[in-house]
Length: 322
Image (cartoon, rainbow, N blue to C red; front, side):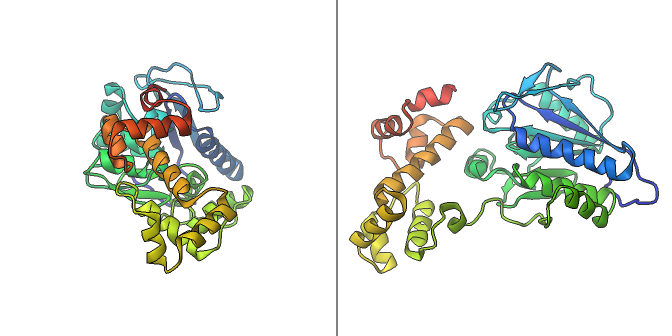
């Protein structure tokens, strides 16, 4: 399918939104409401959508909000765009029927997209091989590790041929406005954005994750630079003393700063980062627990297990079963 600008004779566009169990509700709400507003502005239902699941049975979001599924992959209508919307729980195992369905749609010229962690399903189908893609920042590392042929970016969305991927969350709105701009005009997309009180439409190369200062709420440069070093060295942790030397300060001063801003020591903060990384690997990949431990900077599984249980009140093996 070719995206086109045609304000004189608006074409009818049908979106298929494929949902897995525990899909994220926010992207779905953004997708459907953006299309609704576009229809309101055009005073015609030129943009339609159908909610699809693998078997046509109902499914619920991660916050247990039910989705009114209208079709399964074997009985869906003719579609122009298919957006696969899934959360972190839907990244491990995919129905082969779904993969074949996506491949068939792609061969027929349908634009295929992945929203939030939907890129995992597209990557598993092979449709992202040799292509750039976007994914939620929490899944960046696991997608990169699992699918070596995919060029995972830190952008809010990517368009590579007839494949589109989006980091999810609010960035779903930027993607939808971009698509509407392509189907209609940039001016029309701005009108839709204005109706949503969205003042600035971000381009595809905007970063999917806000900067470190915004994430932490801290402006102190020593703190920010030390966290950057920690995040860059999760698999091979560096000593806090070495971080202090690198930053030209004392370990004691760094400890006072972390206590002031985070009420924990630098070592405790670093451990939390490493365990967060481990949690992502456990929930989004199939690598062994010992491999998760090693990638998170632990030399043996027993030390990793003790730390993980203390942090999350469950064993790594229990986390994987959720």
